[in-house]
Length: 143
Image 1 (cartoon, rainbow, N blue to C red):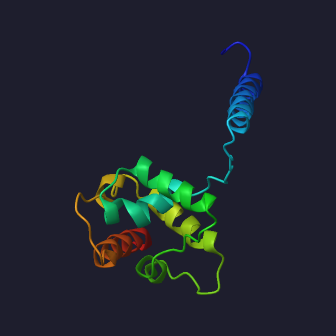
Image 2 (image 1 turned 90 degrees about the vertical axis):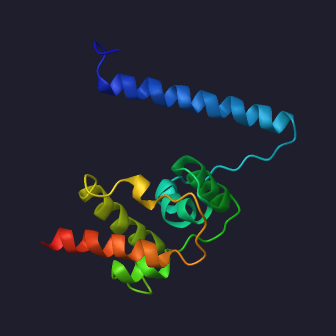
């Protein structure tokens, strides 16, 4: 595949994905199952922030919960503790807060990794644990 170039490889990859979803849709409709396609942007980040620590899940399962909720057309607002730590305006679009958080975590990936957000027990009020992490990352970024 290296000889063909990146454009050709991307085209083949897109073709295989489209064929897979085409056959999945055909099988689902034949069996009477309704298939929803959702926009997957920030689902892993939503799962990380909202469901990973709350339910003690890994990031893949937490992202699957976010995808399922998006399929049910439920809102995925940022938790208030993270929203205030990132200084996101109240009237700002939903994705702007997740964009800021994603940018912040990617910039400091060596300092905080995904497992810092994981806990194997449930915290009903987990914002007291997440807010210091976000604030310390924000302080490191400004220095």
